[in-house]
Image (cartoon, rainbow, N blue to C red):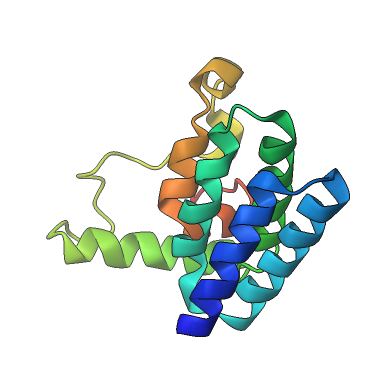
Length: 143
């Protein structure tokens, strides 16, 4: 993994300082290859790459967005049923009774007000922080 860490460091440097946009996109594609070969480390990889989305350089931000998209494509896509089971298991782990709504009811996709979906309330940092379960959901919610 030390060799991959060194390779990742070089690719992140290219993502940030590549001389052309083609070079930066090539680095993003190679970061995707790292994501494919180390799926257990997607969250850590997302955190490293997401730092570059806040760069002052436009080309760096665009290349970082491509890298994040490539990483997201390698997230294991889980069914809605599996995600709901995961939520129930987490509720149980925190001492909430199975099937109770002690944590509050989960909203249904068809009942969410459009005002709740305003762009101003969207937080990309939450998406990156919570990583693969949120990316794998495809925006679906448990009913």
